[in-house]
Length: 140
Image (cartoon, rainbow, N blue to C red; front, side, top):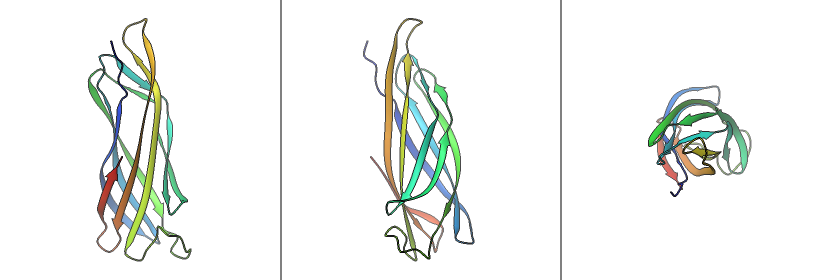
């Protein structure tokens, strides 16, 4: 029986609040397991960068996705906008972020068979600062 790598998705990004140069937004991180065994993954530090500068980090806690199901996490992230610095990712009307998520874990079929599998995703997020909406979300 072949063990497949799980899929990670970053979806449903909403801008909640904008105060004093910081932007708070929520996002869904979904881990889809297509295997006939559960996927148990370790906690992970996810990074948000803009123009090569680290803007924020958040943790995806350890957990497990049951067989043929999807595990959903909701995260709240406060992104500081260093408008005084001259970085490429920050423009007056558009904030471009790059999110990188990497998960490692094991797929367990029975009490005997365990296989290590990892999943990763790189997303580019463009937030329009004048309307507080996500303009583009491109994931690979």
